[in-house]
Length: 61
Image (cartoon, rainbow, N blue to C red; front, side, top):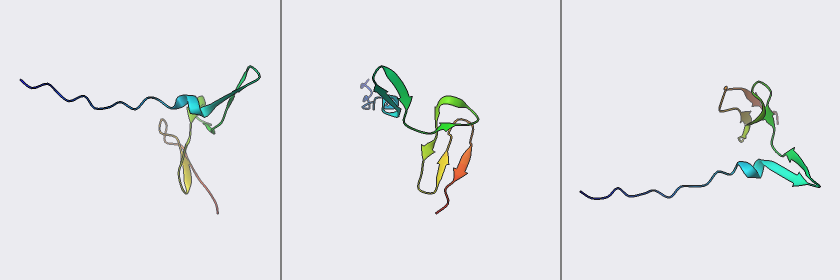
């Protein structure tokens, strides 16, 4: 039998959503109003979207 090829795994980038300054942690992204803190909204071209509950806000130009 041949061995399966192992795909390279991209590490999590959740740490980029937080900022630490002077011993305090602040969130950089906008969090979902339905799910609460810690669940961030994905920023798209014309909307922001929550992948967990499906909440969406359209941006006005």
